[in-house]
Length: 161
Image (tube, rainbow, N blue to C red; front, top):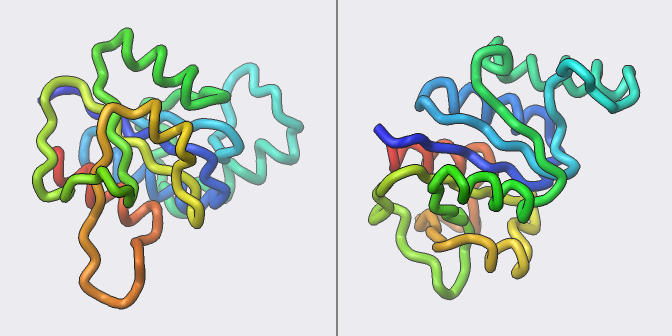
């Protein structure tokens, strides 16, 4: 299987981040965290100690140890992450509802793939969408317009695994 990454842009909920870690562990993906997204504590952590401890503790509640086993990286911006991932031959795929989005049930991994999910309510910005090679969306059957970001990430990761 080709390398798969989950790229999380400006996710504010540490519980969603913990869920990302567990999902990536279960489906064999690596995790890329961007912007204001909480992240586990690490060597040379430049955050204030009380902030890094709090984020680490909250992530651990839902990650259940996966935060210690899933490879992850942090970038300040999606552009910075894209430049690094493109060097690894990655295709960046936005999981977002747009006019150009394709049905996620047709998504197939063709080489290294990075699935990009955005903010809990707003999703990805138009600028961030332009940094991605394609967009896919998850068809909804009920009255809600979208899934929680961690659920959407799990569906997308499962689809390409």
